[in-house]
Length: 223
Image 1 (cartoon, rainbow, N blue to C red):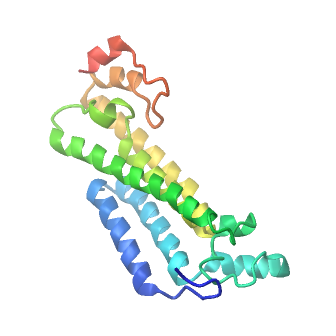
Image 2 (image 1 turned 135 degrees about the horizontal axis):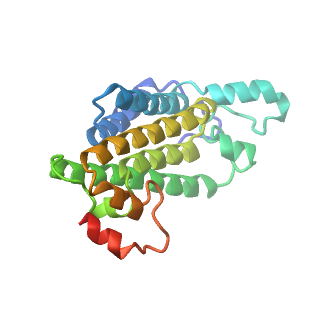
């Protein structure tokens, strides 16, 4: 744990290690092949690079805010890690002993669940070998679990350590994967013209139905 007044940046080996770990696991379960897939993954990688560069390397967001807000910036030592969290600083909660642990508990939960969705979606697709439309497991609740996983990972990191650059990148990242999902669905509909329309009607794209109920007739059609 860094001290309250310790400048906790310039840790470039830590930056590189965290970037490599997250990108490695993302690429392990989301395997881009075509240009449209690499463009979307490129935005995700850019998001991760910007995140950890500011988290442990060069805190541009805190630097800019301290310059723009001047004496109104609500910390005495903005370049310490304890005072480096944008949301907590602006809400005046950076000195709370419980806020940061609770925030990390929640954000890490989102990130871990996001990686689980990446794995769950990838494992079913891998086992199918592309021979049939995958509709079981996590795919019986949402049509794009891997992309939802990426969304949750980025949301978790935005909560855990927000920066100006990642906040700007995030809407473009979400839009890119939304477009990719629509593009892939068009291809799957062409490949499985009998099964996919019923599956699409029965299962939401990104947000599972809260009731958990599904149309029984459509469910039978996609089995």
